[in-house]
Image (tube, rainbow, N blue to C red; front, top):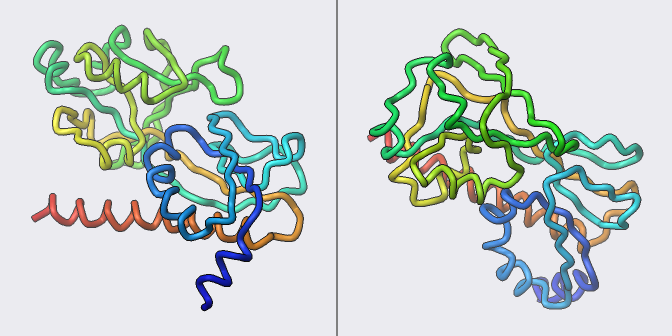
Length: 231
């Protein structure tokens, strides 16, 4: 049948580079279904936050947090998400709810390292959703890191606040987390889907379709949850 024919055509080794956090939440949980559909396929997953280099590594597909600087690649916008500031109820009970950006205690804030140069901390900018004004502020947080999983551990100690991409908040049991300064959000995080400038094989196309399905699944779930919370 048609499904069996498709599975037979999608075979061989497929090398994919994915961001660690995005993959863990939105993609990896659904890999078993993808591999069951394509039993002739073997995956090599390179999980990293920095810009992937398809030319040097020979990988077939990559999702990048930054627009690639390499030339002669096929690039398209893949996913974008808002980043907002969160703290725990325990943090608020101990330190209070910040009323504005000036009230943020940087000695209890966690930020992120620069993706391309971990020697630096990423600059911080907030968008005021009410006025449309973008406010830039110095990154002098006490901790800067490059991994959300470890950031969440610090966040849940009740001693720190940090920015989270929206899917991190929606997909986990986060009843203890409280959005801070809801009128502000960080600059939107964009993701890009990258393939080399060569004929797109059936296996590459199949995985690209799978990635799109993963994002659509999240978007549908997000809209459902937003609808339920507004009732």
